Length: 393
Image (cartoon, rainbow, N blue to C red; front, side, top):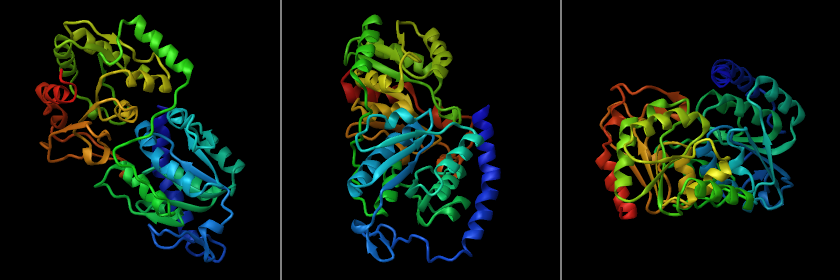
């Protein structure tokens, strides 16, 4: 309920704030502003001084929400670290996604922001003009633009929506390419050389994390590279990404009959759905949902021979950890969020005229106009065929 309230405040109050403050900024003198050359230029300048000679000491990356988007942003953050070797890079995240950034050597500090107006206001007051550059990697939130506008001398973000009035440099959000490349466009506009390709950066985990997971697998009788991980959950904002639970159950039974162990993964909120799917199955399975931290879940998934899941965070975790991955798509487009990886597969049938009904960069999370046909059109045989292709089941 708190998250929903925050998003409503962000949309309506945030739009008004961005419109007013952005309008005022247009009439302020520009001589004290930091300026950048053409987008995608290799040379950032402040008063015509090359970037290599600038005293840029502090860079703030703002990525507040999605686990998947946070994973896809890592290559760009690493490239920024390489382009600004003398700068300290801080990532502003929330409790939800902070562990994606934990342990990454190219990130100097992680600041965790509570999801409340008071916490946002407090962060702005404590960090007012503290950073040289703020890079807003959120696709549509107004609050991230407001934070960037307040805490940095120079602000970089996307060119759509009213929030763009608060940025000094704007980059077009290309929704016909993969999200990892769209994040890379921000970094490239500062001269960073980003090559995402098909390889993501693995999530960090400790020796304790690995020991904990190995013991959990042992307790459930699961063998390394012998079990298939199934992630049937999705984020609370997009329940229309769910593949029918009956099909997950039938697919799991089919894979079990072919000799695979079955382990369901996800967060605590996914447990009711997973238990419902397991109750529909004829064969044995394990549920590991809610039993691990995010770094532990990443290591757990790396031990699987295959992960099958909806368009969600676990799918991107799997791709980052080098596990063979099948992602199921309908309301959103694979071209934007498919699981990166040489052999990974996105199953998508463009049967609905309304797809995509999810456009994250616009803050749109609509329902399918054809009663969920974009997901229900994916058959069990479609997924089983791709699983066989990847693993030879």
